[in-house]
Image (tube, rainbow, N blue to C red; front, side, top):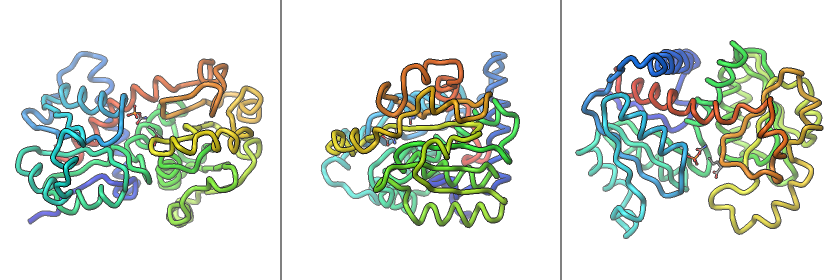
Length: 309
Ligand code: CP
Ligand code: NVA
């Protein structure tokens, strides 16, 4: 039996496969703008398991499947028997008998891998506590659209060393874009991910730098990126985090360190006045809504690539 392809991490794709997904996203975006039908997965069904809230991920996958001629089913964790203790492996085996592809947003990354191991249809990671690979694909696509290249650009990530930061580290290193991360003490990205990004970066001659100073990270950057201070699941630490991240807000002053034509990015949802000032996120350098909208095109390209169309 042919091995099922999953998308649990940016690491599941080669550089060439990632590039093909970006090119496919561009074609799909163009087709949609021209009103050209592109029902590449006609009659196929996507099952979407959500254990955490979502606006963009749900909308992009669900709308994307409709535009591709397929159908998507929203499966809230607590509306499934999963919420009453049915195992992940039994759920994966059961879902595989009904749907053609699964997307899951869950807490523990290990549970996502367990789902994939037991599924006979492709599984897409729609965010775990460790990774957010679909976001990274949309981010790379947006940067590529804006800068017409990825290689040799500099991305500065200021803030929490979280799931979004991890997938950006892996995605940047893969595509040859230098990445400089600045976090407060205690909020550094996962060591294994940094190690993987550095190993990848050595092959693509890419700088992967983890430091403290936001100004230093942002210096001459082409892209300045931040994410929330408290991710889903970190809410109890919110007050402490607000104190710890005081020096890490992306402000106009910080943007002044970046290249003149630098863009500001954020995966959203955002908290103005916390990780970013309103002036920056609502200002002329911000591409956050283009970035969010691009999720639609990149999710469609990911689905098509996994289903082999
Ligand atoms: N960026 C992102 O994944 O947004 P949602 O949480 O709204 O899906
Ligand atoms: N780091 C954030 C991303 C939300 C899309 C979280 O996990 O809540």
